[in-house]
Image 1 (tube, rainbow, N blue to C red):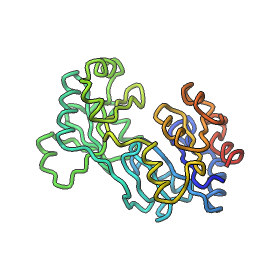
Image 2 (cartoon, rainbow, N blue to C red):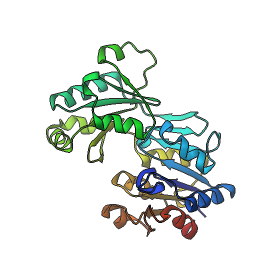
Image 3 (cartoon, helix red, strand yellow):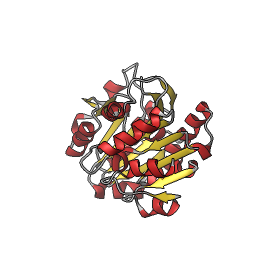
Length: 269
């Protein structure tokens, strides 16, 4: 019996208009009322999923959970952090240098803020901050080093795809050992702690809750969901998922514009 349902957000829970369909909301509420956990697993920060948690009836609860920043953080929906894989400030400096050497814009994200050097602000960064509802602060590296409460969680190169293509070609091999490196979108290149992944975070949360892999359903659409589906006893690919995920999945549901998450819950939980 499924006890925990891990759900990706963009392209999975949300349709192409960035909305949760009413049928999906109803399906989630039915299973949580029956005592199952529905855990949103996303590259977004917690502040970028708050509205969705409210719609699903999961917000501000000590026994409901979110995996954010692609597994860097596990938090309760009443904002208690259970696991945090952080970067160091020197990581930020090295990533900033790598981006600037390749004339690309870089941002550093904390649990509730996106920091960017003033000269790096571009349309992609502005759009990302608005999409995930995170505060955007323009700060120099020198100023950021003086912030005693800085909690670096994720670095992002947000720029034209051709610049990211070039950066990936010239990136030192050491960086791929030092960080989890993920091209999450064509204009998004992400760097997190080497232990940060949806897969590892889901394993740790399930262990904490006493839930076995066979009791987990995971639903996703992109390559960063591969590990999550491997961890789950029931791995579900969306109808709009990338071919690699559909090939791995135990089942394929309808797409994100046709209640794919709700259909999966109804059929296989």
